[in-house]
Length: 226
Image (tube, rainbow, N blue to C red):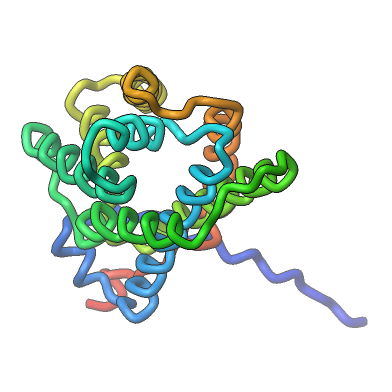
């Protein structure tokens, strides 16, 4: 009689709680650095797609767009400037930025401007809707890629987690409060709020939750390595 055994599924890699120095010493940089760079570039492309769709932006981009209408900066330039300002808010929260945090603040803005220079706004609603949907899905993938590289959260992500830690409030309350605040401020400044803003809010969480476990880079176990 032949006995067959079913292989036990390998558990998904987990995000590690690492200091900035530990993030660099954790190994597998040959995989993690390219994944980080790819994620950040694709994130910028996804933002440009949503901008060119003209159907509404994600909460932070509503703010970026609104600020860009008042300052002599490109959209990507405002993204970079906002990232730097948010990083300054990390100081009282005692947050330490990692390599991925600093790269996030700069690379996404540059990638967004480059993509905006290549993409054009279509007159057809079908094309614009497809660009919006593609931008949201690509944003979810890009987020999972750069978070999964385990080289530090983005400035805006770190602001949320820092406030959660310092205030003791739930992630839901802090994130909702931040995003409502930036949407309201951006809208008052002239940012674009639309169906895309709602679609992003509803879709981005499930998309990242679905993709992230597959893209977290498994780090060597320090106990086994020692």
